[in-house]
Image (cartoon, rainbow, N blue to C red; front, top):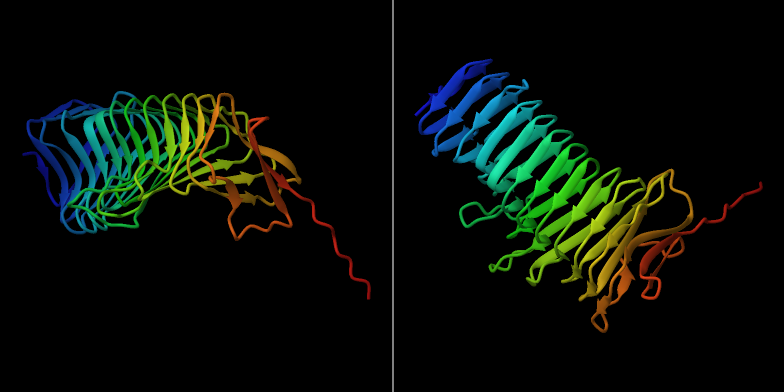
Length: 360
């Protein structure tokens, strides 16, 4: 079945490798996988980088002509306690489903610096374990669902937080996006590059077992983020908790082109930095269906003033009694806010506190 020895390495720089069924890189051992060229094709049995207890895999993909393809699934860390790291500097990886950290206590990290990752079905960053996806360049395309993380009946590890952090490159998902799915915790940090979400986005998505799904969507830096369908900060499930975090200034566009729903006690956090605060824009209905908690924050170089956190251009739908309020931890001597349905804005004001001089 194309099994690589439990303690060994693969170094591929050219040619063609065809594995008819399944490829295992490390089973209860360690493996270094290095591909800097050539074409690797694996059958529908898929690929596992790190299978079994405490497997360790370090995989590197580089070279403009590097191609790695399977019509099956790719697992990065699929064992209790297994640790797998994949670094992609160039080349093209293609799979039907890509899973990071798919067992309890598994740890998986994907560093995408260049090249492309194309997933024809589902991307799961965390599936019972701890998944981290760092994208500083290259391109990611997901045709169907994107889970951050995904929790199923075989791999519950409640309270786990998985992270997708983007500082460059492009990301496009044509299917649903679920952050904090089924009892997990997920953070999508969009800080640079261009991201497009063509379908529904759920920030916080609980499950029927009563476990809370906690999701955070952070928008900051020079990021261009476009949400072309409806977005829920806190999904309709009562066990969903969502946070929208607007971070710092910049010139990027942060646009929600369809309706945005605030449900199930959502949180809006805003961090003002030396560049100010670049607000998000909602071009669909803005629906406040639950009381909303506000948490302001600032960096050391932030300046006093009034900053727009959010603006909406269409209609407001607000359930009676569902208002905005500061978290009890907020210093109200320094911060105030205003939600103005006429101006269609949510603003924060950072006050300049007086200086106390002690004369001896």
